[in-house]
Amino acid sequence: MRLTRRVVSFFYNYLNQLTVIMEKTKKSGTVKFFNGKEIPLEMHKVRIVQSIKLVPIERRLEAIREAGFNTFLLGTKDIFLDMLTDSGTNAMSDEQLSKMFVADDAYAGSQSFVKFQKSVADVFGKNLILPVHQGRAAENIISQTFVRKGSVIPMNYHFTTTLAHIQLNGGTVVELYTPEAMVIKSTHPFKGNIDIARLEELIVKNGAENVPFIRMEASTNLIGGQPFSMENMKDVRKVADKYKIIIVLDASLIGENAYFIKQREAAYQDSSIGAILNEMCSLSDIVYFSGRKVSSSRGGAICTNSKDLFNKMKDLVPLYEGFLTYGGISIREIEAMTVGLYETLQEDVVGQSPSFIKYAVQELDKLGLPVIMPGGALGCHVEAQTFLPQIPQSEYPAGALVAAFYLISGVRGMERGTLSSIRDEQGNDIYAELELMRLAFPRRVFTLSQVEYLIDRLNWLYKNRDLVGGLKFVEEPPVLRFFTGRLDATSPWPEKLIAKFRADFGDSL
Ligand SMILES: *Cc1c(COP(=O)(O)O)cnc(C)c1O
Image (cartoon, rainbow, N blue to C red; front, side, top):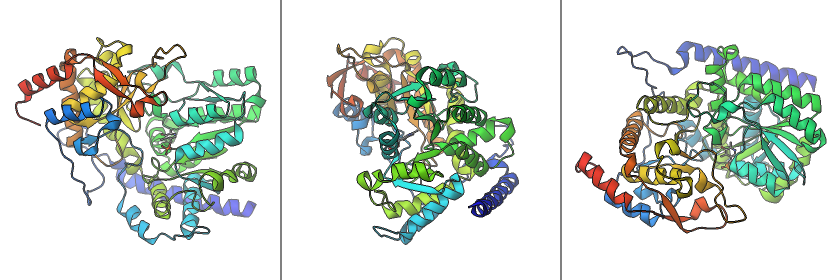
């Protein structure tokens, strides 16, 4: 056992040194421009393309009406830039695609799974792996195994599917974010940190026996893809050890979090992404992830080095997912996930989306638009209550912004505000803390001129924001209403917006 550990650790050190050397020689993809401009440069070339169309604004009005002013219900034939999500939509590499053809299809004992196990051990330092079909499936298994009625689960912030699974098993989620997390325009490098003092207080108050695990989410999705620092993670480990509680790390966006640690945490500026990933995972007892995000494929997994924890969860995999060597994932995707995991060791890969988001956020900020700062992982977030102060929360400002922005640009974003919330027992909307439009930047999918288009049209909308009005429900499903609910404009504001668009842009699309 000790010998294998030494061999494994020798391998990591070798791998890490190798990546440090590789990164030093090319200085992380930053190129100085003679004209002094700082723009993110693509460290990839396009070899397979998919055509997209920008349909005229009049068709976009028909399309958004057909979709009940809900961008989830739009068809991609009417969409120019699809920025709904980064889930399963990252561009895959040539290496990933080629490996899909050598997949070893077998119900049990597939050698593709053996390769996957090795990649998880190499990249995350965990040797016991349970495959699952996507991230939320991991949350189902972890929650069923560890959460009981009365359990309290502290975390830096919730994710929609995480919260649902924990509640389904009778547990309560407590978010212990720092005050900085809710500041829209901030310069704090780690808005995803957990508040350590409140974490300890919570454990003492509820009793450690009622806290089955502490959950940390890398690049905290719902507060703008904001990272936590390694220092914060080390402090969480100290608290966990003191009270003998395990740490569960949601690693769906861990590559970007590691990139931010390297960029923003002084002690790590010379570390390789591989070394940072390894250290983050070594501070956690269970690591799970959505392969739709982290490895630019589809699939997911739960991993650990504890035989005891592994055995507790293991039997649920064949029950809900599939046999232990495929977990409901197509074997081709397992091959793609394996390569995708190794690719997260490259700074150019995990830094691509954050560097484009940073560019977009800085340009939008210069134009005076309310965007979440600093830029994080996964997307650019526009704050709708400042953008559209004339729309009360009862008329869904974030939903109206997303619909208006689609109308004038063909860009599909996602509402993350009161529409995505629920009603209380009296039937009143529970207003969201933040009304956001999220514009996702899937990895290596869009070009900088497309980002320039986005900035230009968003700026135009901001200048014409007085023309935008609210939305009201016409069909409201009782659960997860944001997916399939239908709405309408509260006044003929879309027509007014089109008239102004035509006056300013002539016959431009
Ligand atoms: C997307 C995501 C999940 C859920 O993963 P799916 O593959 O969509 O089920 C869980 N946690 C985080 C942080 C995510 O971003």
